[in-house]
Image 1: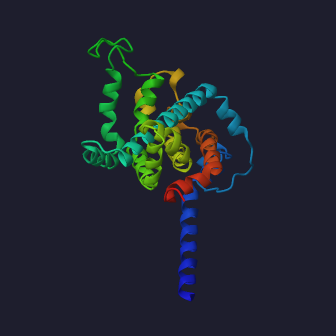
Image 2: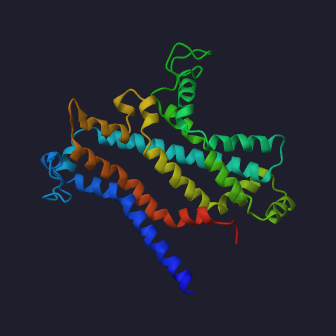
Image 3: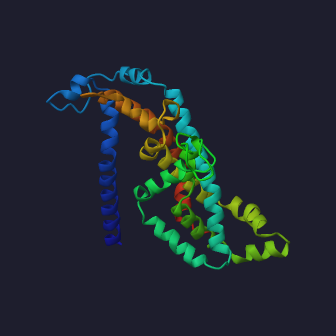
Length: 287
């Protein structure tokens, strides 16, 4: 009993220290957002700013078209979440409950995709979007125009797929009792009806988990919007942070103020949906 209590205490202390280490960059970001450039450039390090003025936030918001940037990020994130939830859950249900030729091979290829960094597939994905037939001025062979470059479709379509999402849904659906499928079959429902009427309504926890993971990933994505956009009208919040970097000067205080505002929506979403996130990660199916 004493040994278990000791292990529990060590575990709590270790996790607390790890949490503090992970929070240090966030704390530094918030504190820097209140500092002046003189404090930041000072050879003497100042952890706490001399005054907590919101002037940096006001200057940051006045420096760009933040309404457009927010609209773009929000639209891309919401579209990616909705379509990825739909397709990932359907694919997970198919792998978990349907028997078809090559299912095991396809699932193994899916797992290989989990081990492949996105930077490896970025160039091929960009070429597919740029040479999309009959769109963006392209002909049937995908030549002559820009395809889906600098469009919402080009930004969202590659983000819809996700090996990890399909894997999570498959593992989740495999824990559903087979008796549900048998009862549905006796009632005369087909596979699509079984999915939409039984499996999907009971997938709130796993769908909330996937929503958070996909939402945070897309909202914070910098590289893909950088590759796919070339106009101010399609710029996202992450790309907008580069406006604080000019020749020979970086406005760190304003950049950190903007970063704090960008982080807030996803942080609030996580706090509101934390219960479902934890439940979706540890659930073992229907109780």
